[in-house]
Image (cartoon, rainbow, N blue to C red; front, side):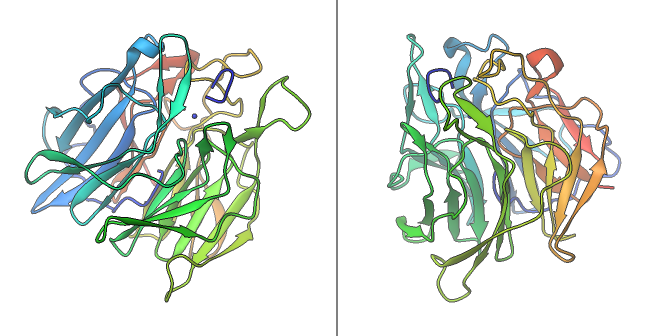
Length: 348
């Protein structure tokens, strides 16, 4: 992206996973940088995977395919593709009002040009249909996302055309309108990770333009921030810096929030920001971190969940936190290999 080269997050409800099913079926095809979400529809608990890039890792491998999995089912079901003439990367997804909302992202053409879009696509599982929401005022991709009060969806920072922005944009799912919230006070970033839980936004890391020049053009950020949403005005946010998280600064970590234990989880990612093909902006291949950690809202502290998570991955848009564990769908494994694996990571 970003670009002479080129990346939940978001609140996802804690969903039960059947104890009798320790493993989950893989995605129908390998995908990385796919937007993910979860939703309760009646008695069903559904997982979703939207768009992303396939094993070839070229512009031709970017797709608008969409899939859903009913928890307990043996395989994923393909649903109608995300509307639009082309697939996208770095899309942000979140659920509200029994619908799934997809925001922004970027498209890549045959010449390698990357264009950030303002699209808002909404999927209704009941009717199995898509419709278009109001466009994002400031087009962004690689943005952190979160849902507040099952109504307001926040897009925090992200890349917009020529640089990362400080904007925090709030979409009202009830009125199909946008407002600008208190901007972040830290360095504008893209490919950062975070989520919204209760009235708190936590976001960390990502990448930013190298102020010293184009070699490399982007650097990993080590900033960690908390935003407290005003109970009376959802556009007012008090931002404060928090302690560094365990391990190195990273890019495209998988984040997700758990309402049950009041924690925001982070897994994988890499300390070497990269283009969509997994090759770092510095020319070195990026490799995933095996560390999984969490921010505990009750204690306001970081904790390490697993220093050596099996089959670590990077290139994520989110994870699903459930009582049984953390669900990660797809991503890039070691050697920048795109995977169809759906992993369940224990929370303790």
